[in-house]
Amino acid sequence: MNFGQAIEALKARQKVARKGWNGKGMWLALIPAGNAEFKGYSMQNCIGMKTADNNMQPGWLASQADILAEDWEVVE
Image (cartoon, rainbow, N blue to C red):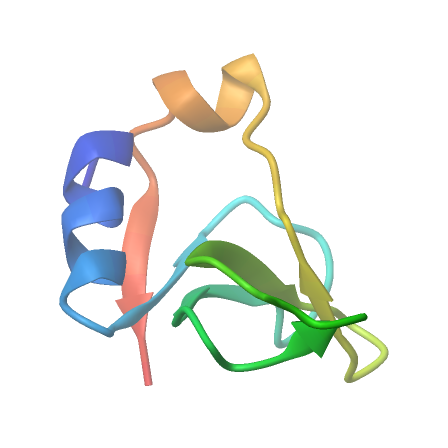
């Protein structure tokens, strides 16, 4: 699927990843607003990445290669 379809899948609360990513088990998910607080400010929706070392990194940003890629897929 393309990047636009991957974004729609994220909005539908599905996890997505690129087939071409090197890290095993890496995927993206939409982190819903209000899931965390930072010094009294509530968090807004953001895309987070589950990293190869089993951490969640909020605020993932797509590269140009990610945006133009056609190898996005929904993961379980």
